[in-house]
Length: 349
Image (cartoon, rainbow, N blue to C red; front, side, top):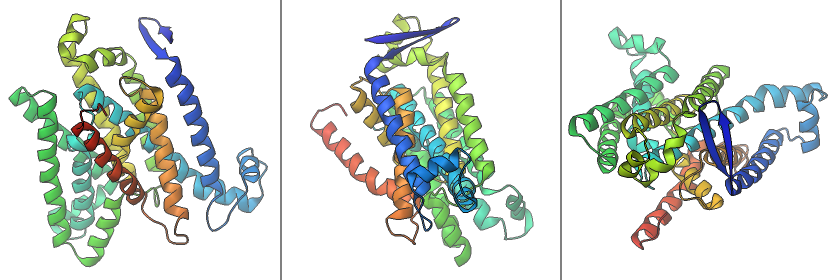
């Protein structure tokens, strides 16, 4: 059973099961959010969390919840949604269950941009101009440039989905080597700062990062509306999509550009939080019993994964706080192995 939504010339079909699963996932995410707001060195009960959010909390509760924990939670929700949505777009467009924005060089490019600012910003001379750019802006530019290199190579070679993955892996390896070289040449203090950024974390971020991520997500969702109807056909292959009247080239380019924008801003605002873009679409597809990853459900699952990972990062070894990216890597690496084993057995991931 499906629901059809129409707004002017744009229409969208929504399957009932993914909608129901999405509602459950949203409820789980909301529960995780309440628990996250209440967890920490100053624990707050769930009923007091709700009272504080409603404006009737005590002064200390209001300070802890709204000033300290809520911005971090909101950034995690937005970044998780961006990664989940980006992963779903890449996997569907590339028709590769193991594809993710990391394979487009986005995360690696963002990493080398941020590390370049951290390491070279204080060296003096021309490189000192990087210090005024900031890690967020440098990471965003680095991610977009890496994706542009991948796109240029693909255009020159007329590559398809397989070539997309291969070129992305090559670019990722190249920028990864540059990042490693910068860290080797850095001072001890700069190397520590760079290594901390490379782990990916929601800590130490402010309103600037939250606003950038939220605005980007909203703009991408609006831009995605006219392109989303082509996704089911693209998932079946370019020939099928052309037969059904879709312009495969422009649709594929537009969808990948949106995926790159999401992943670049996510990496720029929170660092490289790995495996969420890979895992979230698979969990969404399995939960929704869908042939491809539902976009809305992938975004919700991504938000839940980052929220849960950040909660574990803050609470598992308190008062020590782990990087959020370390937790997602611990969960995501075994999941990737499981996917590879399923593919080896001939089971569609």
